[in-house]
Each structure stands twice: as C-alpha cells, then as structure tokens.
Image 1 (cartoon, rainbow, N blue to C red):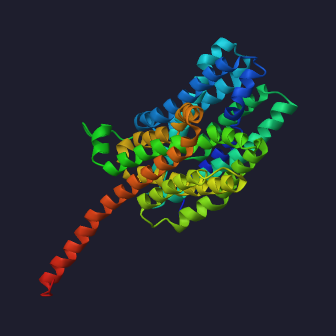
Image 2 (image 1 turned 120 degrees about the vertical axis):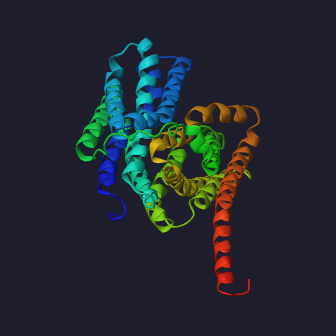
Length: 405
C-alpha cells in the first residue's frame, strides 16, 4: 500500500486527520448560536444555513482558483483564512456572524476542493483510488473522535474554545502542509481555448452522468443526518440509538474503505460507483416495510457499504478523466455536487416528511436506484466501443492470417 500511494499523500493525510479531529464546530454551531449566543431558533437557522451555502460555494470554486494559482497555494491561503476567522468568531457581535461564519465555511470548502485536486496532481492515474481512500480514512478517523471530544470541551470548558481549537487546528494543518507536502511548481498555462470547462465536460458524457447521479444521491444520502433521526424518534428510538447508527457508519468506513479500494482497484470504476449507489437505494428501501431496530441497522449498514464503494471511486474517476489544465475545476464540480445535500437535504426531506411521510423512504430508494442505473448505463456505454474496437481488431487480424471469421 505504501508503495502505491506517494509519501506526500500520507503526509497530507496526517494533516487531514489532525484538522478533522478538531473540526467539530459544524456539529455544534446551532447549539452554540441558540445556547451561549441566545439567538432564537429561526435566526440561528438562518446563520447556519448561510454557513452551509458557504461550504457548497467554496467546494464549487476552490478548484478554479487552484487551476490558476496552484492547488497547494490555494489550500494554504484558504486554510489560514478559515483558521483566523474561526478563532475570532467568539469575539464577534451577532451581526458580524452573518458574514464571518459563511466566510469561514467558504474557506473550508475551498480547502476541501483544493485538497482533492492536490491529491489528483500528486498521484498518477491508476493509484488515485487508493490515495483518495487514505485521505478519506484519515478524515473519517478524525471526525469519529472529534465530536465526542468537542462535547467534552463544550461542557467542561466553553463553547468558545471549540472555535479556538478548530481555528488553531486549521492553522496547524496549513503549517504542516507548507512544511511537509511538496509544491508541484506553477500551474501550466493552457493553449488558447483549451482552458474552457464545458467543451471538456461535453466530450466526457460519462462524467456528466456521474455528476448528475451524485447530485441526486447526496440529497438522498444526507437524509441520515436530517430526517432519519427524526424518523427514529417517531418510532420510539432516542438519540442513543441514532448515535450507535452513526458509529456503525464510521466503524465500517474505518475498517473497510482502504481494503475495498485495494481489492477493487482494477475493476471498472463506473460499475463500482453504480453498485454503490444501488446499495444506498437498497438501504433506504429496508425502511419501507416499517422501521424497527433491525431494519434501521440494515439500512445504515447498506448505506455505509454503498458509500465505501462510490465516494472514493467517483472522486478518483473524475480525477482520471480530467485534463491537467482543468483538473481543479473537475474536482470542484465533483466536490460541489458531493456536498450539495448539506443545503438541499433538510428542506426537501423535511417537506416530504411533513406532507407525506410514507413517501419519504420510497422516494429516497427510487432516486438512488435510478441514479445507480444511470451510472451503470454510462459505464456500459463506455465499455462497448472499446469492446467493439478489440473485436474488430481481432477479426482483421484473423482475416489477414487466412482464418475464417
């Protein structure tokens, strides 16, 4: 494994782990706003929503900056900005939070997109699935430990120290990356007209299908963080049960993601992604007959197995398909659609749960299955021309050798 993934990626993963370990403010920001800050729920929701929009916007635009100025440089600048703003948040008046929190979240989104693009340019095609699996394992490891640690800090010390720790950890990540992860030189200037994104995407329809499928599935996938805990509570299962469900998710990812990436590294990527999306759909389908503890566990297990299959593989596939001069923009598009559910999942899922609760899980299951089928179709469409070319070449060779065809 170490021979397949460059040392620079392991060093970057170490920084990602530390950063994820202290990135717990997003879990507690709503409690902070309604608790120590004393804001009403509606105002706290508005500020939190603006922060979510900042995250999505940062993911969509971070790669564009990286293509122009260099992905490592953009990652460092954005991490420093995010760290300083996060550390200052407890000192700011409420009115300033409307700008400061979205700014911090925007910089965090830029860091995420730049981080993915940096991995893509550090790692050659063929090893990117393993490299992205290492980064995701480091991130998930930090997020598994971080929230309980954050709860301890918030209750034993102060909510303010959550932002100080998060900001300081982000600054440490910037310093670590600057010191340990090598620069790859200035970004190359593309030939005239070659830097336009749409022509590159249009010539790769499978990438467009994949982006559309991920957009749909992220809306479905993130119901586990929005309507699913509400649904559990309605069926007599409290927050402790939900906490164990999330633990299943994190535990399976930590144990299986890297081994699965290694095992499937030579398999067609779109097949793996398509099967992963189908598993997400089957997970939600497990709730359709009725929700009891067993069906909730099955749902979370299938959802997590689907996530293990599709997230790393899809990220690597987009990187492999991207021309060098638009690598960052391809990664930004994927990063943006892969977090779009942070904005869309709660209002869409909440509206369905409030008006027609019996339709929520069938709609989630159906949407994910359709998305998975579309990706499988796109993979099949890509494989057919190659198969025809191989068959045609074999036929020509046999005719030349005087064999019957």
